[in-house]
Length: 157
Image 1 (cartoon, helix red, strand yellow):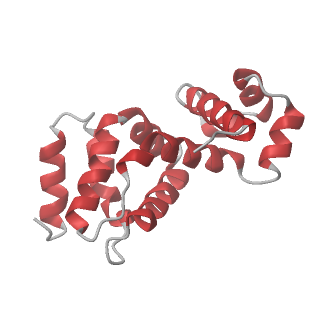
Image 2 (tube, rainbow, N blue to C red):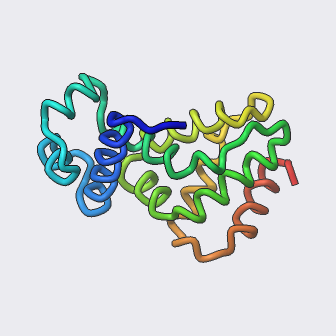
Image 3 (cartoon, rainbow, N blue to C red):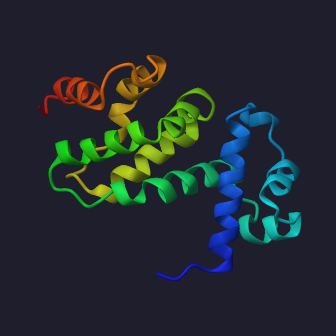
């Protein structure tokens, strides 16, 4: 797979947005700040992003860029959930920002991730309460403990 200049710019913008949202509220972040941090001109930004909800788009792009290796088509729901938990545990800052600062984008991420892995119509959205608890507890338990809790409550042991 070859990366284009557009891929590179998208990646720069997504990384810049995630760095900004880690220290600011989503509503306070401006296009100018994202462009400045990414080293991308405003015209380049608008050429790539158009009039989309750029904050959600960049959040999702970042999630799938770093998590893509974790999401594979799965017939087994428990394995699909395990892949998701492995990703979230490894990239705790993504889950932390999603739950605490950009919940709507994080829920979109869970929805789209469930579409990617298949899993017989199972949706990762039903895991949100367990993921939220994991974030609120500061990932104080092991990945396996959190996974076991979610699987048990969903009846998937």
